[in-house]
Length: 166
Length: 166
DNA sequence: TATTGTTATACTCTATAACTATA
DNA sequence: TATAGTTATAGAGTATAACAATA
Image 1 (tube, chains in turn orange, yellow, brown, blue):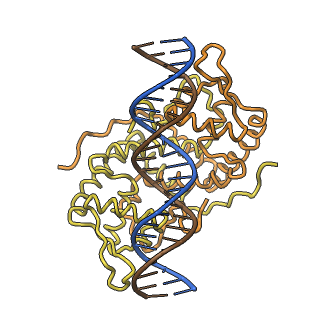
Image 2 (image 1 turned 120 degrees about the horizontal axis):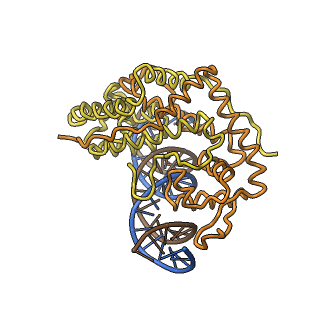
Image 3 (image 1 turned 180 degrees about the vertical axis):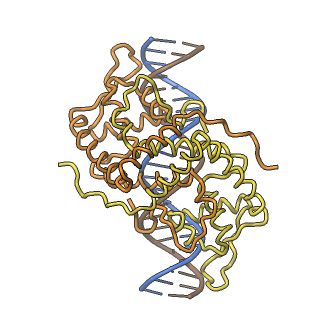
């Protein structure tokens, strides 16, 4: 959420030269994502839900019995990060660790009843947020944008060259 | 850059249900931006340049005499963040604070000779990174994607509703 | 030996608030 | 009084590394 001194939203400032920044896909992506992330936080503040927490709830909801290590892998974070994430969702009363029957080292994750119930409203709020922001574009544009982002993020990219300063 | 245990890149895991996450613009944006940010860091590692540092160098280069407070506003960060950013660029020998003639409280920022020189190579590396990643899409798709992102991020969004848990 | 979850620790990036010197 | 830059401090979020229990 915007705060007193610093707006996380990178508003365009008139009279300032942006130069080649305006030609970069990465800069456009960064501006958009930063602003949308901020709107997500503001929209979900009543539930204490952040984007990673929401993703974790959805994954556990649709893939019950998920282990911490699997969740970490799916979300692209370290296991220690998954521990903290699950701790937070447990503290919110949304998730629990249960002993895994087949592996006494591991825990199976599942949503609590409260978690499953609240996830309905949370999901609706997330969808409303996403639709409200997307509403700036028409339906065809929204579909096009999602398709292009999906194509870009799922593609194999050539590795960065090993070059550097002379 | 990918590390031993945790890939920051959120790779899609087969056999996992993603549910409505795959319908969200925000999720697609997050996945793409995270991966591209990581590629930027890897590509610019030889110079110690991160996306915010690059932006700051470009802004100061094109808008010489910029004050710290202005830089903070342009970049959407707090003044204390701008201090740290400029400190880092000063430590790299790329930027200096100069007394502002018209206001003895303020500093004018400018690039050092080294900063201006290296910015040429750095800019080329950034453009190469951006083009390499964008190369997954054809030229028309790249243009379309940038246009849609620009339209989305520059638009005025309706504010989040004040609703919450019952 | 390898893996699971955990803890300890640290680093980055961001923020707020209080301070100082000017305006 | 208000503003520019600074400093102190803290809170997310991320990481690595080492550990105990179990495979």
